[in-house]
Length: 342
Ligand SMILES: *Cc1c(COP(=O)(O)O)cnc(C)c1O
Image 1 (cartoon, rainbow, N blue to C red):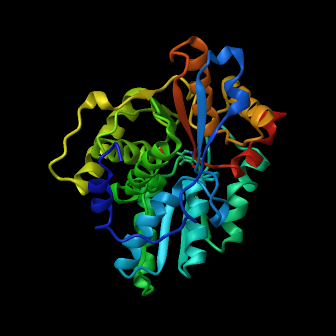
Image 2: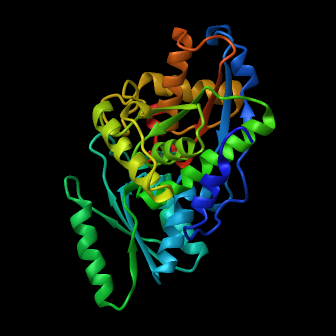
């Protein structure tokens, strides 16, 4: 092993974890896309974190492995979380609760920029109901955290033991799922004989970015990460990601330090708002689908892949660069955005 993976894997083993994946997700080369002249000889690869069996899969399952471990260790019987109507995290929390015989209460907030029937009732929110979750739909402008506090005390007084999972599952414990993924990627890269210069990801609640960054730091890898922020501004996301990476690293090695310059966030792809479609997102989703037969979502993966395409087309990466895009799932979101693709 070229990287120091033992320390990372030993540190991760100290935290309770429930397996929710079938095993490592594949890394595949985008052979047809990489041959397009406009991509200047870069080798594009994808880490298929959309390929997981439970609940439709996606990046939140890696965080939920550690969050469910924490919840069960505390004797919880009900998972509570919040997100938007089209939250993939809420949908996967509901699926995990169903699989493990726990109750699930979801607090969902509407979008200021999308209000059509598909957005409000199809995609993820349709699946939440199938998984048996109790859905609390809040009106526009209400605060999910104060609603969650009330719900927790109400559940407690009914004799239940609720466990609150924060937005996107991005607590330091949740982020450990992506620290583990960093180790998985380094092992796979070694087996493939490929050195990745960059890992490209969407950044929403920053847990995916923080976990990967913490894992790579602990393994002393030279691979860099770039996160395309889709929720907050570049500046806010950089600050949040730095703080969360340090907190995650703290769980793994209290003596580890991290420079602010290690965090690389690009805010150019967000568009007008979280969840607001952009022209470059639509083009990126269509290109990946039509050239490789692969599906990305309109809120996260589509925007991050658009950022990767823009950087490669501009010539930011020399020919022969090996670039790994993490496919984070979110397929149900496409059905909520039918009108955007018309
Ligand atoms: C939540 C989510 C992300 C972003 O992950 P964070 O850890 O919240 O930054 C990316 N892609 C999809 C499909 C998601 O559901």
